[in-house]
Amino acid sequence: YALGEIAEIETGRLKAIAKHLEIAFVVLVHRTMSTQRAGDIPKIQDMDGGGAVQKDADWVLGLRRPDLALEHERPEDHESPAFRKWAEKMAAARNTAEIYSLKGRRVAWGTMRTFDFDGKLSRFSEMGERR
Image (cartoon, rainbow, N blue to C red; front, top):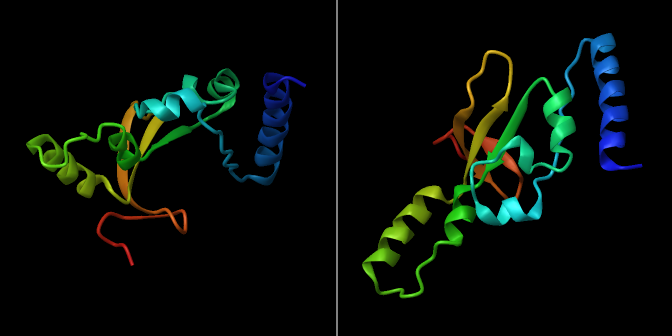
């Protein structure tokens, strides 16, 4: 089956099950490699099967790690003012994740929140409440 065919079949089944059980499903979709390298704000079109996701999902959230995006901007001269400025930005961005609203009912597109992120445990927490 093509990815779109599988997405269509599975999404229909998931929605029916969710409605019957009165629960929500969270489905994770991977961003394509080319968009991961760019470090841009995520978009539905960046996702594998993006058309099916846009059509069928009630809510779509995108995740961005600012420290990973900044890593691509690292100046080579470690003694330069540009490197010191980059290091300050990197220190502030490290261990954070931005959650973007890409689709949702009565929700505007854009940054929803920034969270602390523990990559070793894949755990999100409120800013400043890291344990």
